[in-house]
Image 1 (cartoon, rainbow, N blue to C red):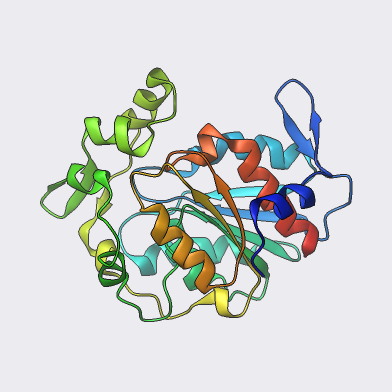
Image 2: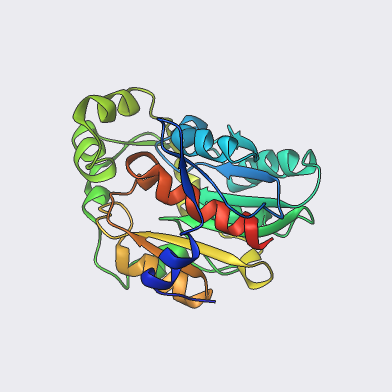
Length: 255
């Protein structure tokens, strides 16, 4: 279902601060104990670190997959193997391009619900690039550079358009560990749309300069996702990790 920010805030009100780190513990026990996280382009699994600490403090078993950014098949296979290892129902969350992986492998029998964080969420076989062209091109697109078939973001685009609401020193560290991606990923098409079968949740980044926020809203509405809007750049999982963790915990609580 889709709910507005006020309704979602009420649903998350059960979460209370825990410790100096500001992690959250739900007042109600989670039905689901496992969370698997998929990263997007220009990043690796460490981009989830601030969310992970909060989820672990809430008693959840968390795995951030270090999947390759080579082909959709290889990335999906890496996440599928991690899902195979989960003992019981699992929330599968993806950031940015990680949403493509979530849509592809979210059909795994261990997956109970899906969480998209400023993420792509294609339908099965959909040309996502053609869909994205129906919305204004975000500024970060101009900063993608290629060395042959290996792509990355320029430093200027990374600091200003990808991680623009992080302290500059922190953003520069993230830039230093940026993981390149293969050009083939940009045209890869999913064979599944897991959000048609599993409950979806979506966090829209309203100040996103990497994926158009209106495109994010369209994707969330199309999948009838429980939706929250966060006043954040593309990396809300780093600039506002509590809001992101709260949404993941809501998905776990609802089972």
